[in-house]
Amino acid sequence: MIEILSGAPLATVQDLGRLGALRWGVGYAGAMDPLALICGNLLLGNDRNAAAIEAQLFPFELRFLAEGAVAVTGADCAATLDGTPLPPWSSAPVRAGQRLRLDHPRPGRWRGARAYVCVAGGVDTAPALGSRSTQLRGAIGGHEGRALKPGDVLTVGPTGPAAPVFCGITPPGLAMAREIDGLAAIRVLPAAEYACFTQASRDAFWSGAYKVTPQSDRYGFRLSGPELSPSAPLELRSHGIVPGVIQVPHGGQPIVQMRDAQPSGGYPKIATVIEADLWRLGQIPIGASVRFVQTTWDEAIEAAAANERWLDEIARLIGLFRNRSTGR
Image (cartoon, rainbow, N blue to C red):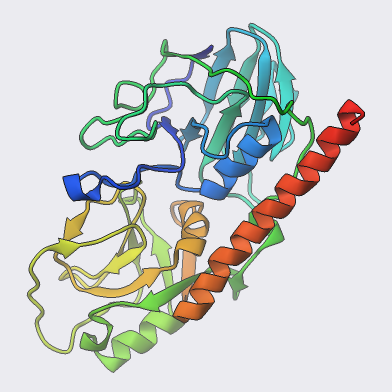
């Protein structure tokens, strides 16, 4: 079991998301950085979809009420166990009573914005519509459908047959880095109303940098950059949207729908972040900027396959290390 000690808001229980509920008006939710969640679970021998704690404001602290194992992935938050440093993207055994503390993300080539605390057996909250992910709007899933607060106690599920591997891995932000002029490069596909924007706006969208503003959260990233204008006024009926869709409201500053996006909206869509790069965008800190890169459908499919190949290789290497450690 785990006791939450920190008063840092917006820490939530998340797995890979709630699929198949859009028809009921319930969005995906799930980890903003699914690769980080999966890697933490691989290190611990969990199912890839096991639930973990997503922390996005720091410092964040918890206490283990029983022995087990923990893996911290995502942002490099100078994690410590009872004051002893825990390297980023690594796992470690824990004893009852030990405290895990995550501090503010450290600057560097791979900084990140969100950290994931994965535990052997996974966080065992009651599934809602097939997922343990917290959807704050609607109070669905997670721990009582809300953000975690001091005094909360989370149950840990039974561990699987694979023993935890106490080692570290290279973050995908370094292993699969994509940058333009020192800024994260996010691949996107032109969306339905792309041709309705002026040529100058389209050129600016591809050539300019867009900053993630403080008005951003798990629902959407509000960006600040070159203004985007339609060739003529656009009035659209509300229609279905999914995470990654880039909408442009009347002010001309884009909004990227993120994991807690509502299932419908009426703003015109200029582009859509490919699914393979949503984890990159999810780790961009407030105040940092990104560049958008135009891609094709085939390239988007290949990018998703490349992510899977990378994860499969991580799983293979961890399996080899586990077999060597256990003498198999």
